[in-house]
Every structure is written in C-alpha cells, then in structure tokens.
Length: 445
View 1 (cartoon, rainbow, N blue to C red):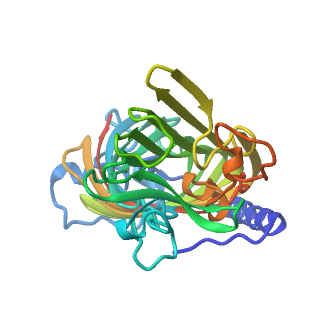
View 2: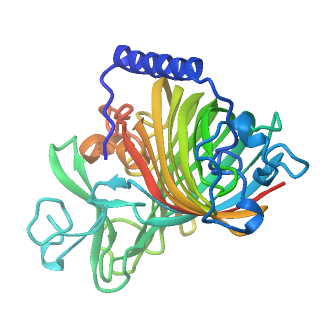
C-alpha cells in the first residue's frame, strides 16, 4: 500500500474536501446515537448486554433509533447501569518499513593488501554490513486508551490514547581473526574508491560495530460524536457510524552509529607506534515530529455479543524533521598521551557535523479493521489490523554522505585544502509504512 502526495496545494485541497464531507454527514444526521469508539475510546459496538445475557436469537421490532432504544431497559443505555467511562490496554505486533544502509563494513583477501583489498567494486570484496534494509522486522509494542462519555445516551465522548510500537535493533560486529576488514568510502581527493582498514592480520587488530534502531510513538485526544445508530434492543444487534476529531501527535526516531576500536600490532608496516589505540565513531540521529488535527470516521456492525468495526482517520498538520550528525576520534599513543578530536570517517567538524532542521505541511492517514467480543457486561476483547502511512520522514541511513564521499583532508587531524566532503546530503525523505496486528482488553463502567 502506498501514499503519494503531489504538492502542498493538492494536499490542502484533499484536507478541505474531507472536512466538507464530514460536515455534511454531521449536518445530515437526524438520529442521536450511542457508543462506538475503538482504542481512541469507548464501548465498541454498544453495550455488552445482550438482553441481559439471554435470548441472543430474539428480536423486537427490527431497527430502532437511539431514542427508542433508551425506552428498553434491557438495552442498558440510559439506565442506572449505563457505561460512563472506559479503559483498555492493547498489544501491538507491528512491522515498520526499514532503514536502508549503504555498504559500511567490507572484507577482502590478504593477497590484495596493500592495494585494493576491501574496496567496493573489487570482485573479491565481500560486504559484511550494509547494502541492506534493517529495522524492518516485527516488533512488540503497546497502546493504552481511555475516556468518558459526556451524556448518558453516548452521543458525545472524549477519549485519549498513547502507543509505543517498540524497537527493532540491528547490531553487527565484524569478526576477529585472520581477516582483512575495512570501512569503504569514495576518496574525493584521489577520485577513487578507498577503504579505512579495521583489521590486518599481524599488523592491526580491530573491530567495526554497526548499530541501528528506530522507534515510533503516538498520542492523541479525540472528541467522538455518533452520527447514526440502528439497534435492536432485545437481541443486542445493531450498527452505527461516528465522527472523530481532535489532536494527534506522532514521533519517529532513528539512530545509526559506526564504531571502530583498533590497536596497532608489533608487526605493523606503517610508521604508527605499536600499542597505539584508536577509537573512531560516527553517529547519525533523525527525529520526525508531527503535531496537528485529526478527523475521521468509524463504524461497526454488532451481532449480539460480537462485532466487526472499521476506522479511517487523517492527521493534518506540521511535520518537523531534525538531523543530528556527530563524530569522535580518540588516539592514544604509548608514552605520548591521548588526543580527542571531533569527527570520524563519515563525519567532520568542518563539513557535516551539526544539527539541521526543517518543517513542512503533512497528511498522515491511519486505517483500522477489527473484530471484538463481549466477555462480560463490563469486559470486552478485540483483535484487529492497523496501517499508518507517513510521507517524507528522514532516516539515519539516508543522511550519510552521498556515495560515502569523503575527503581525508577534512578528517582529524585535518589539513588545509579539503573540499566539502563528507557533506550533509540534505533532507532525503522517504515513506514510513507502519502496519500490523493488535489485541486488546477493555473495561467499561
């Protein structure tokens, strides 16, 4: 499933059209209705009472309006036992579209050292980490929701919810042993592919670690107005349609770090002092925050003690994107002290290290389908499927220098004459698709 937006004018036109459609529906609704809120709150599908637990097959006089339903005590709508509030907890088993990484750690044959070992484009080079999509597996999360009704007939209600979709972590550490490993890049000083060595047997011992994680959270406050409801108070069957509107917040964060820990060995063929250690780290972090209004519709079809429901909502507001880039290089030389500099391999304090931010209009649709059942008069369970589509989010993997372009003169210790690489590539947005299953328990009183 995809969601493509074609410019701010088209987006605002779509939002205006949806608002007009909902206003027409609200104006044309002539019957008051009862409860129907799913996770954003409420007694899904109406009361859990099915003619006080008996005669599920029975029926009165077919479809009745809310006013008529209120006259039937078995409905439990406006009597002393009417539902005035709710609280629920939901398990989320979701999957998010992943973070695409370029080739970050490679391995090459010893016979090509010194020379082209580990460089990208060489037939014998093996990619150990990167050139793949990560953080795209299923994860476990949760949602909490609750609220209360503003009138006994459940025509108006206020609900609130918070969810955390959970983390999916990627963690790679290069193997130790008789391997030549390195971190590839494109050397803009020479105009050729290059590699920063991480381990060379008998000369350099080291590991490269790649970590990536992401997290999606959201919260909202929703005003629910029942547009229409049809019920059979004796059998408990019914259906309804509600209008939702309120405030919505989303936050999506991603993190990527590449860390080297190296030690120069006695057999080194370089001018480095044996025993010298290096700690080199590049860090990329992105934050996407959405704040705005939300409007939508949800409906249900109830059959005695069970129901099916569906919901479609659209968030309309502002998306703020932030990219943070940092790096550190620590060199410890025996009998000569330790130096600490900003910058790693893909980061430099003279080019791309810093904080970058942008803001733009955004539309975020959400869809839900589910089926629920009443366990008791006050307890129900539900299972369903969710989809959230968020366009133009920034991810850490997309904020690395384009083509892994690096000018070694800008790296610590920096020298004069360097170009603008490694450069900040700009806000390279992509679409986030979050989808998966949910299972919830709800208590009403």
